[in-house]
Length: 479
Image (tube, rainbow, N blue to C red):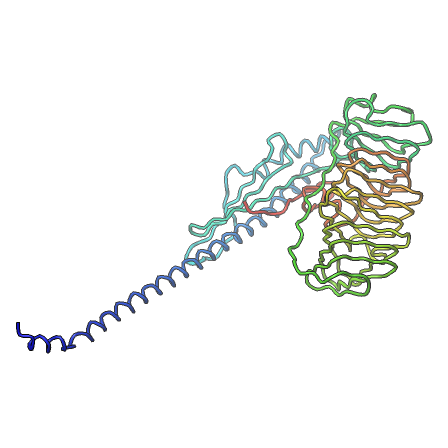
């Protein structure tokens, strides 16, 4: 072969530019197609997320309207029952008639469409369906509302449980008792103590109420389970008036709240004034003959604290707002001259104490206006202190001792033996068992807030209307 003819051909570069242009065009096309695909998927994802969130809002709005209509139906039926009261019909007979008719007024036989008209979202017409079911077929007071929001293929479901109470003043048929000074699951022991108000025990049989010899007395009625009227009281029976009731309702603790998730701490507090804005976390509050003031302004403020220890120390609150303290460890107040929120009201300060291996909260010789919820702590009130507010605890011991200690409020310790050795309680005691040597005077509680009488019923709000009719609603939650 002639090599002289091949060399010119190898040096000929014509056609390489075309190949390069074609390759570059292919690369740009692939890159462009990839970008278009990614953008399209992003738009689809964003649109899907918006549909999903919109479906939740639709379900929530429909549930809110339905709850309003349910409330109106309940109260309308109540009015109809009262207007048609027979001449010899008792309150409890009216109550039976009300609950017999209630399911037909609010329960849906099948899901129904919400009357709310929703605007189109991404070309789809949103819709909501509602269903109200009776939770327990034998109990016409408990219900669940289910709301489903739908946009295209996206669906979100929310639900709310609620129950209806119609309290009556007649005995024998209602779970509640009138003017309860004490509601106790097991035994009530009265030594030299005085009780002014009615008390109830859910314990059946003999010995549920022990009247020991002494000057103790009950200025009220002792409610016991039906059939135990003649055997419940042991000891000085002549001092006790009993009445039977088919069911004695002992309220349980509402759910303990979750604490805010804050990591950074602002350090310990030993005195001075702290102006609160956003939720804050501190180390310990340690006050020895010092004063600490929290300025809350006119808002609801929250702080997390490791531990509170007061020895002749004072905590004050400035402003018209409220303060919630989430306490990770123990609370101890001693010294005889300590005070907490002395110039405020009990509903202005709420303290939640996290579970801590059954520690003991000591409130000794202080003046305190606040409400306290301890997840599992035992409680000791003593040394001529003064407490005004509510105390909820899951602990197993609640002790009140030493002389002129006075406590005013609602004291809920359904797992505890409540040892009321000395001092005066004004309000209501709820406990597992109760020993009293001091004084217990019933007083109707008016306080509101996260640690209050309203929170004992279903963990939600209580809506009252005339005639002792209540609708207790649990929080709306997603299924």
